[in-house]
Length: 239
Ligand code: NAD
Image (tube, rainbow, N blue to C red):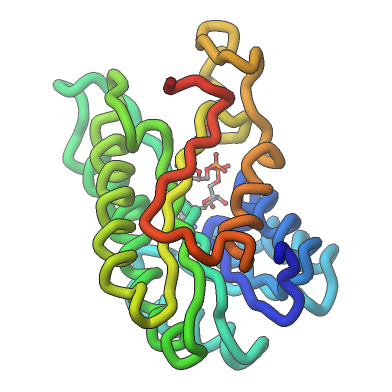
């Protein structure tokens, strides 16, 4: 039931970090993969290494028209979109008095509006195909509060809420929608965080591959009766 042969998965922010690990794992499970990201060089190198079942398409997830082009491009190349992973994200931290409007707008636009636009853009293709799986990347910061992360926390709680309304609305059309909540994962986003200062019951920070198995599970028929659910992948950190 974990086999993704014949399926197509689109991963935003797939050029590096967690997204690139999701792309590799979905590809290994048999899917064709579309990497949609701002980072052209990294994304192109990744899909070149994977071969013909992989394509890179440039996308700013906050760009409504850009989404139309990416969905059209994915359909033209692979004939369908069965899985969408809304993974593109940015984190901006500052004490509230220094949290500028520009920071707030950017973080809401990429993490929350980008996820909304992605879900909306793939629904027609998924509904036509009789179903699909949308995986929205939230965070442990979509489950609790943390100092300085105001816009990020608001956006990630928003992603969690958006997942629920979509799961209820789209279930009758066979589309499952779930959220994933990674804990501290070592990527470019978290280089300034010292894992030693964080209490993680499993005793270490995570790597992108630690989260990828949950993504393959949610993409596949192994999770066929799961929708509107939250998957915390944090080594026991928020318990
Ligand atoms: P990262 O910075 O390494 O990668 C983010 C990717 O998103 C990059 O490839 C970047 O180019 C892309 N991106 C950023 N803005 C974009 C835009 N407007 N349009 C298209 N692509 C865009 O970060 P990461 O750690 O791999 O994070 C991936 C996701 O996981 C994010 O949503 C993040 O919030 C979430 N997350 C990360 C952690 C962690 O500890 N690293 C924990 C919980 C959740």
